[in-house]
Amino acid sequence: MPRYVVLVNWTEQGIRNVKETLERTDSGGELAAKHGLKLEQAYWTVGPYDMVTVFEAPDDEALSAHLLEIGSLGNVRTTTLRAYNEEEMSGLLQRLA
Image 1 (cartoon, rainbow, N blue to C red):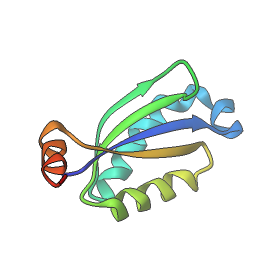
Image 2 (image 1 turned 45 degrees about the vertical axis):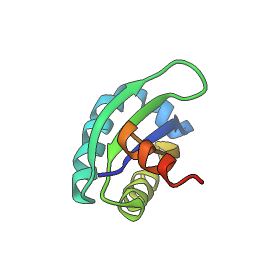
Image 3 (image 1 turned 180 degrees about the vertical axis):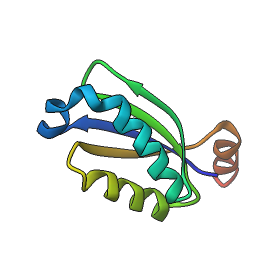
Image 4 (image 1 turned 30 degrees about the horizontal axis):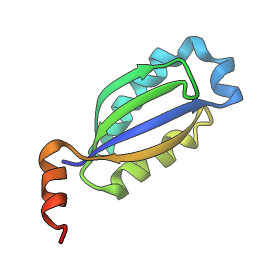
């Protein structure tokens, strides 16, 4: 199943309610399952992003639906990166001429 790295920034609402971040992340993981995703990891970070999460998702559409639903709650904004493991990257490299 494809993996995605999601870079998260809290909105003004999200930082105002920062004490709820653990509960929100747990709820987000449960919501992910509704869309067929698995929240593999969640990290709270220092730097330009407040969190980094890693999801397994069946496809781009499932991940997008999940992130739209999460985003509509008003606590976070996200940037999504498709991640390739070594085996997937090897397959991509074999396509090069």
